Amino acid sequence: MDFDREHRTGLAEAVFCSGKSDTQLKAICGQLRQESRSMLFTRLAPEVFELLQSAFPDMIDYDSVSRTGFYRPRSQKDAQKETQKDKQSVAIVTGGSSDVPVAREAARTLEFYGYQSLSIDDVGVAGLWRLTERIEEIRSRQVVICIAGMDAALPTVLAGLVPGLMIGVPASAGYGMARGGETALQSMLCSCAPGLLVVNIDNGYGAACAAIRALNVQINR
Image 1 (cartoon, rainbow, N blue to C red):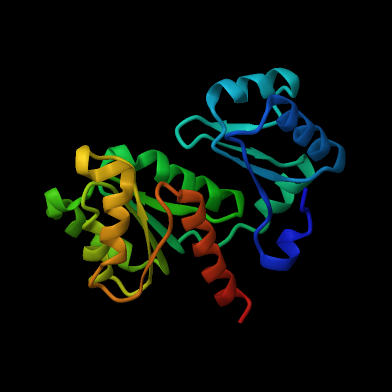
Image 2 (tube, rainbow, N blue to C red; image 1 turned 90 degrees about the vertical axis):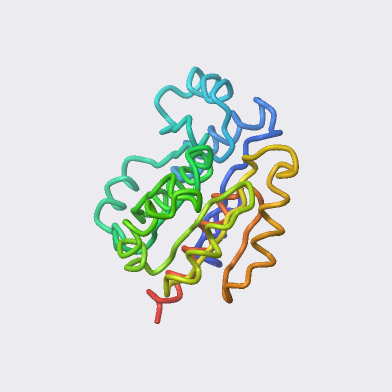
């Protein structure tokens, strides 16, 4: 495990669980507990979590929607409570409720690092009044993470309305020509709104890490 990564970059190593064997994940959990190290687990399937839960009872704080897990030793839990970051920093906005798992992955990643976030769901361009009703809340945030599938118009619309850093996350939700998020990705990359940062398909974790990097720059000035 690369335990020194957070000192180098401000972001600790996370365990991407998909594709790892049960033996590998158990070994990781054992090392974390032995060395009293915190860890974020991503793409942790429910059935794999149940296996780890049986081997390491109550070790991992699990969220099934985002498929993320936290491990934090008690001493570090107490320390984090004393160093909570600005609650008003990040908004996470989704075009539709199908995008919520990706949004929750972003929110949980931010939470792991001590950032609380504002979540606003289902405000896509098919019902723009839902977005305009919340736009002032969104504008007040330093960073906005916007998740959208289908044609992914929402990040471009938001990037034309808000001053903060805009991070677009193409979602795999959609029919046929949505192509599992590829159309959304291409749409965001071709956005006419300048300064829209785009991460990979369904990559809520990566979007949150980009937000944290930006916020870390402001904090360390």
